[in-house]
Image (cartoon, rainbow, N blue to C red; front, side, top):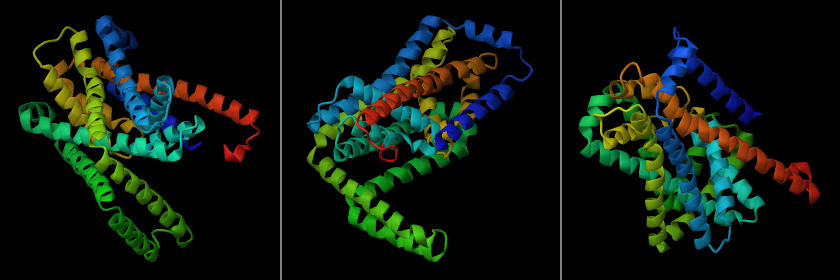
Length: 348
């Protein structure tokens, strides 16, 4: 029911955004604007969105093979679509990796290996965004200042949240015992202040211990397999660039010139930094608003709204819908398999 509500929330935000953006415009006008785009470029954009998902599949497949887990690439592609689906419908993308680990377990991947793989994916995914953002901010500051000046406060908050998240990961990985002690101490204070219910105290202690135990394993692996980690970072960089390039493809589909590929990618990176850590499913609403603020000068007033529909449609909604279908099929298969093995419903 929680996931149904999250999907419903995204649907409502999408409808409200559409109504606000295109109030006073006829549907025929909107369709005309969309149809002026070169469909060959849009097809390329759809390919980039698929490569974005497949990029994570390559990372999962590679790291599982390093861990001596022989899993077909198509299964890894399934995990990626499922992961992005649940990430897109849950606040701060919190539901993606637990869902991926669940389906890995159903395919016979041991929980220790799946936890390690998803840990590496998380570290690389967030770190690459922050590092790329800082590099582009330094070396392409003119573009950020020109197109993103009205995004300043949100971008600042985004950098702070992302850097805090990375710092937290680094702290847990390098000092897991300290992190465990700090986490339990904070939990004790929150319980004393009645912010956390006393009856849930032990549950949270177990959760903190489980997380820290996982990061102890991850810390040892990172230290002993620097080459593997470096390759994961490289693949993650290519993966993320595929998605950030979608807006440039939409720009080219309208035959526009004058703004470079690097400038458009820079601004997409800035939007990602600004919105990804916000506690909204799929960062719905705020992403669209940020796109209009940043890209109005690049696309022009007449084309920025249809460009938003195409860019967001390719990079978000197409992945969301495809991921939902893949999840549905995977879940039906799991249910049939559990039923055939007479596994009680509460244990599935």
